[in-house]
Image 1 (cartoon, rainbow, N blue to C red):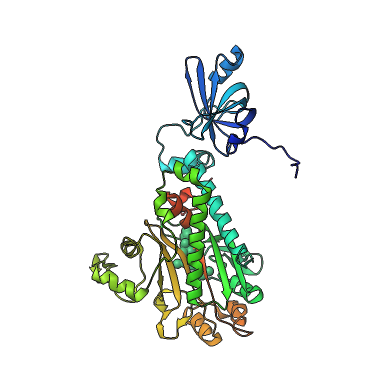
Image 2 (image 1 turned 180 degrees about the vertical axis):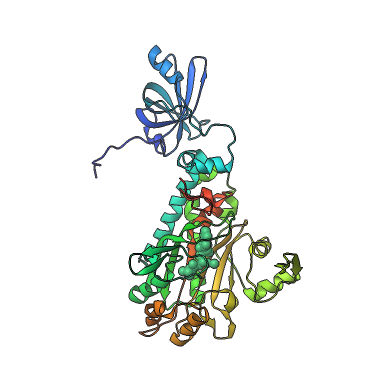
Amino acid sequence: MESRYKTYQTIENIGIAEGNEITLRGWVYKHRSKGSIVFIDLRDGTGICQCIASKNDLSEEKFELAKSLTQESSLTINGIVKKEDRAPGGYELQVTDLKIIQIAKDYPITKKEHGPDFLTEHRHLWLRSSKQHAIMRIRASVVKAIRDFFDGNGFKLMDSPLLTPNACEGTSTLFETQYFDIGKAYLSQSGQLYAEASAMALGRVYTFGPTFRAELSKTRKHLTEFWMVEPEMAFFDLNDDMDLAEDLVEYIVQYVLNTNERELRTLERDTTKLENIKRPFYRMSYSEAVEWLNRNNVPLIKKLPDGKEIEVPFPWGEDFGAVQEEAIMEQFDKPLIIHRYPTDVKAFYMKRDPENPKVVLAMDMLGPEKAGELIGGSQREDNHDLLLERIIQENLPVEDFQWYLDLRKYGSVPHSGFGLGVERTVKWITGASHIREVIPFPRMIHRIVP
Ligand code: 4AD
Ligand code: MG
């Protein structure tokens, strides 16, 4: 089909134009002059191409123009595409003409080292840097892989609302807002409860969108606004749920390996570690994990009322923190699923294990290389009375959950689902050191600008 809008030659596909004269449009990434040659690293959004402006090929006026360029000035460059194995993309452009669109003055992000605060304040410009550019392209691939995986496996996309009347993942991390005359509304912490209703209507669904947590955790892994994909499947039990989670993660990683070789190289990511991410992954129960912690002397650090901290053997029933998760993961080169957590540390909607009511049919997938928790999921409580009991126990307003309880009144079936955090996944795959680098505009406790 012929395009109705302008199609440009892009740096990404420059190889097809080898030997031809083309026009590139973009911005100056780097620039230096050496005698009668000016080297311009041009970036056009798809990649970076080294352009060689030689005094011999240009009029005096154009050559002076090339010399006058500054970082991030915008321009169009005409030139002949030459194969050059030493150039970053394998090709370079021998410049025949150039036109400046705008000369940029004093671009704030320069070659010198900038601190993370400065860069985050300039996120709107930082995105142009080659590492950030590579991370964003991988993020786009991760999102595409997720959609392809579900769309190709009989799932239907069913979006959940973001403005909601009730909590899903505990009341301590809710963002509140006034909703006209009706009263308080909350930004969604998870689309799950609605995905359950959707699954009862369409069988296998996924909801994919931003979710919000007023997280007070100031870590490298927490955002207050993050993207989550949440599949929900009628007639799936916990085992089916774990199998699906493994298939999804394997698919995403292999997709990125196949699609983003160049970006992974820019990030100097050790891809052998990612090539290894193939099923089967590892699994253990929460109780086995506690035994392992105690066999290996990984304690729980307890804060006493007087503020003093003491170390105690890890007690069954306590939730794992980053310390325990990282200790356990040190022995694994692939993701690990921990299943059957204590009922008391998990959300109200999880189904109790018929074989041991002290645990729920929950599962968390932890990633290797200190990736942390990538996935949280469970089989859902499908018994009306047990679910009501849990809602009351958690002091949740029963009237707000009537619609959710209806799902257990009219054709209740076993069902399961999980949520995968997009940023946790991108952080792991790219090897980024902080989660703020893997979302275009991060939202954290102390940051909402830009
Ligand atoms: O484990 P979580 O809280 O699970 C749920 O919200 C379930 N309702 C999902 C479901 O069963 N449908 O969150 C799921 C995932 C985590 O494993 C993590 O990857 C990510 O969401 N996540 C965060 N990512 C960034 N910043 C935060 N503050 C996050 N909190 C959770
Ligand atoms: Mg979780």
